[in-house]
Image (cartoon, rainbow, N blue to C red; front, side, top):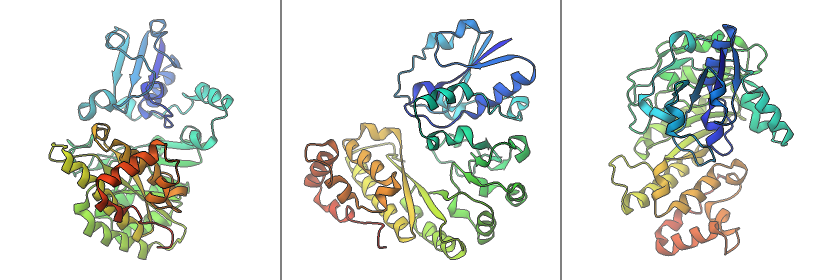
Length: 369
């Protein structure tokens, strides 16, 4: 059979820089059975294939793709992923789920990127990493998460199931690795591989123990270690755990980052008071992270686009999510350095004029802390 695979995020999202694991597993499964497999770069040639699998992780698009209902209804098209079904997405069949990913699926696309002089760093997850889930699931039931229907973290795939000997690094997509009762045995297999690794989705710092910290940082953990700080109500426990982390990790170069969720209203109201409190809560969390030399990475819930302060959220993300800028400048300095007629400066000036009490937050700074 002729199998076509479409990574919808690659076509629909601007600057998408992460391979689709399900697509690579589907490709590996069919190639192993002797079928012809091709990654498609548009929707025009779907009729040329016996089967076409469309996988999508993200629900937002914003690109120039042309994925329509008519395409999805074609008899040779099969589609799935959280981008289509969010928390109701069906898992892959067991035989495909436990298939070695086809890390060569993106080879032709990579060659095109290289001719465009795309930086190697932007392509690193396609070229340098073995990618997979050591565990699946989480017990938190966070309402904004695709895992909100999950109840616990359990072992998923043994490392050797998705580790390519030619790939120098490991990337894990686990939902809540530290919550798995078998974390120690699994982490031991990672350490024994001798390869540098990272948990891309972040680790649950609220439950981390000294033993887990020591084991994690005993390995070749990559320079960026991600945790999450989603709710200011967790401030006390997160401060305690950051203190534990900093007193336990011996490597002074270890760079700790935290995802900072914003724009999500747990009451479902999204009124003016929510938006103002949410922005102030972002700064409160950022200030705590600064105290422990931890870099924030702003994660904007899609509702922020309907906020009357959309521009402030954009400015915040541009400030926080560029470490070289965040390390040297306060939010005020970042916004003020732009020309008066720029959108960045205008968002800042107009917001501050309307809500001057917020200014106290705009001068917090990592440098010198």
